[in-house]
Image (cartoon, rainbow, N blue to C red):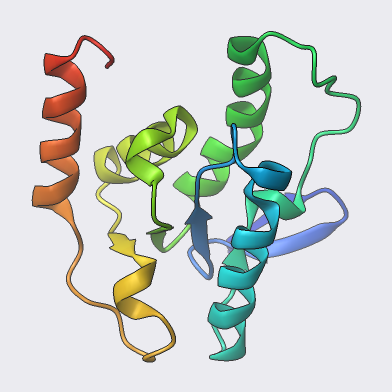
Length: 146
């Protein structure tokens, strides 16, 4: 049985792509240029990447309350995290609610979470960041933010 997921009009093979996670809320141009640049670097080395900045949800008004807007995007993006080989995080991920949800989902499912800036086109990934991610969530919990 083929492991494929239908996304819009395209198809991605299950576990054949990396999910790219980077801050978007309160970023210039919603972080889309930064995500696009990182995705291009990864793709140039032959990696298949799901970049959430390339998949906006039509009709979501800027005036929509943040929690409701975040929920719409997570309904789309968390299944993509679940189907990925792992998550590659961009700088600032730990300050983004959406990124934290994506990272938590990946870790809960046993997927690797990798730091983009240590990979940065070298063609090989460093060890996953389990200890660092756990520390971020402990800090968020201590602050009452998680």
